[in-house]
Length: 319
Image (cartoon, rainbow, N blue to C red; front, top):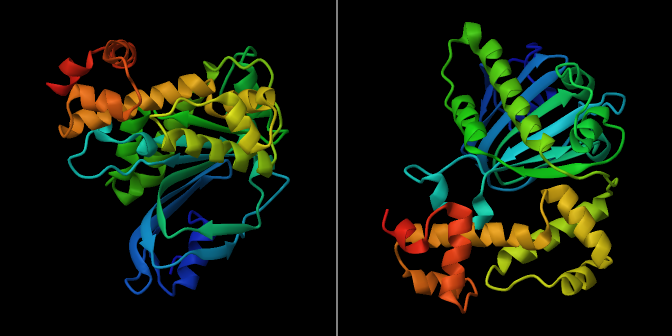
């Protein structure tokens, strides 16, 4: 086992010990008696590390985190929904499977325990905030990027992964670089991925950010799940706020801060992504898709769909 390899994350070594298996070339293959898949990790240097997980376990596992260090200002990036099914295009993904990344400051990710869930497919990258900040020369970063780089309060953001980031993700996952160059190659790709993500986050227009607590985060994700679970029903802010136990003002403010969009615009974006998914399935007519997603006026459906995709539903379905 590569227990003496300083480029292997301690959490990976701990998981290997628990599963009574070995790490070979920084990769842990899940023994068949526990599930299937793999987990591989890389410590590139003291500033940046990466863990790639793609496995199914027979049951959840809880591990102590051997690398909790509250003195370090680490930023956490979790790229999720990134392992596509063979032959499936990005526009054939339903609304709740869209690739995205969670970005969190260390103040919201200092848990001493790590849940190892039964079904995981993600790339996790940790970057020292001071190191990342030194890579940028402009003093005029947006409040969002500036708050991330300062890393002094608990913040969480979710960002959709654009095609340029998806290309880098695919290069990381498919990597077959010679072992002599692997750490160098993957570090460059990890930093490129974070750079493109920071560029995307720079475009967010929040002027003021509010610190979060775990209850806020849990509540906002329940609101998100409710919205995405009922795409045929437009969200009603007062009803969502009452269910969340928040004022409408607080709900709208925190939702935009985390997800980068207003509640209705977020809903409409995913509603159109779901429409594109249904049209790609070729199981429903344009009118059936419109009605399934709550439109009573098909002309309005066509207009909104074109605004989001650049094509009318009929054209899109005939591609």
